[in-house]
Length: 348
Length: 194
Image 1: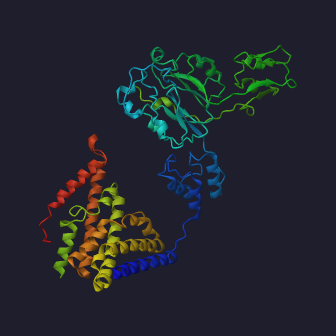
Image 2 (image 1 turned 90 degrees about the vertical axis):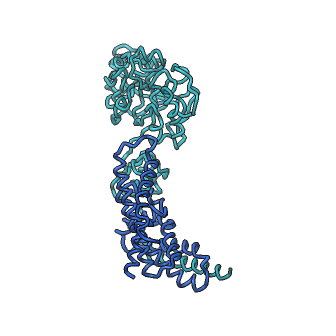
Image 3 (image 1 turned 30 degrees about the vertical axis):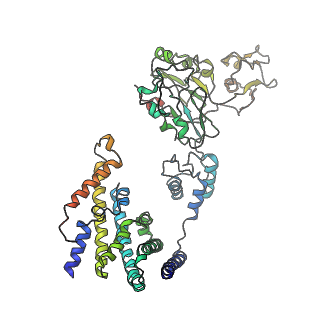
């Protein structure tokens, strides 16, 4: 007994001391910057950067194989922290949010049958497509919500997932959870979205959903920037041209096009610089501006939709945007074009 | 003497192949055999650790356990020795040869407590091998391990291109393949006695 304790204890002590000595003797200075970079990354190993986890990503940034904006999840703070460690100028990573391209919940979309089974969209979709009459529609069982590691999604009472923008990091983990391929990461600057994925004819859509895109062409005609086209019976916004004016949102008969910018500011014409040139009055798509030639023009805040077109056209800089979310002049969106989402949809 | 060593080597390599006949070290066998280069890296790491570990445990047995009559402490003390040794080897390699560390680095901690390593150390004592026999046995066993690894990695790389029935995809087909490979190695039994 005593011999066993002594022998094992002795061997353990020798091994321990030996290892302790060896760790000093053979200490290798690891790159301190790598540890710093790792500390600055979110550390949840989500893989949204394309690397296996945060350590390979830090490694790639350290060796220059990846840029400091490699992490799409951490946001601006992470980019700045990484740039500081690397001693380079921070490059903005494009902030993106998950968007669900269906708003047809319990109230809007017709059901073909009642699905009873596992509470999971990927299981439901195996049973004749999951029960929605529209084959493109959200199944409403919340697989995307379960996939979100940030609690940035919830199912509303209408059984449609809602993204909480303040929490969404654009990590893309929810997208593969959707069996209908309804989720895409959209740059935050593209605030106006056609939230429908149906490439069926308008008459077909009308039968199964009250908020689907019926390809009625109204948005195409109303868009002052020719940013909208109908492609395979589905309106599609070209974000290179779209300025988020919101006209299509106001005119869409089915409320398929939604505006994610929150409360829009309203325009206000400053009395001093206004020369009464009538340019803004004529350009206003909602006839919210009234006024005679050479006289001060007035904006009807009830009619104004905050599209900024009057501000853009005014030669005297007399239009001021007031209210929550107002921003500096000019065309506001310089969005990166997002991939045509029709290519991502499996038709049929 | 020479023919005895050759028999030991043949036996450890083919007839009583550690993975395919003794079913030791199946974890890295299945885990690291997805790609040929990692399989080769693992095999080299095993060769390295197995040789060093059998040497150290053989010395401990001869110098400590047998003289004091503590044979019943064999398993636990061998685990201790092997674990400490692998740590030490990792440190030394990291310091002295960064290239070797890059090649073996990931695999060394993985095989610290591998049953194949411990198996060699214990089998050597069971068979009461001398120094030369021990070394031959260890090297041959690890070469046999490497052979099995490389064979399975090659098969798996071909399997990746084959159309596998849906219910067999993933680990299932790998286990089936490993089983058939093991059956093939059973053909060596009877070649060497013992």
